[in-house]
Image (cartoon, rainbow, N blue to C red; front, side):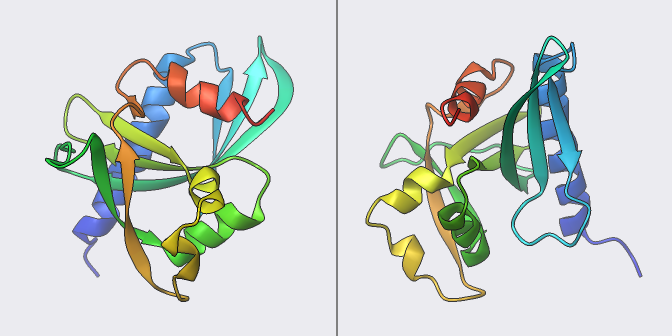
Length: 161
């Protein structure tokens, strides 16, 4: 059975996110752990350390990838991330642990946009009305971008602790 383009893109997207995080924390104070069971809405668990010491700070990451450049919408200062599943919103609603959607372009320079799905679920959002198995498109503010400087992304994770 040949490997599908979807699987190739998923692997490239995960590798891109891991690379950006590893480059931002070359001392290893941000550890990406693979979610080894079947993907039900969480791709990675991010664990933060302080000079090698555990902090107890973790975040769940859901990765969505594209091989194309992510473009700003013409009508707003946002980007559009398609195919976010109902199960992702359900995880966000149920968890106290930060649950962050990352929309990554594997085109150079590697860029990702991130969104705190829990804050989205706190709003009066139609996302909570999605039926099991449904997907929707989510808008992410262009200010939530990470190219080389991931300060804003890690500030979001730390805001939960």
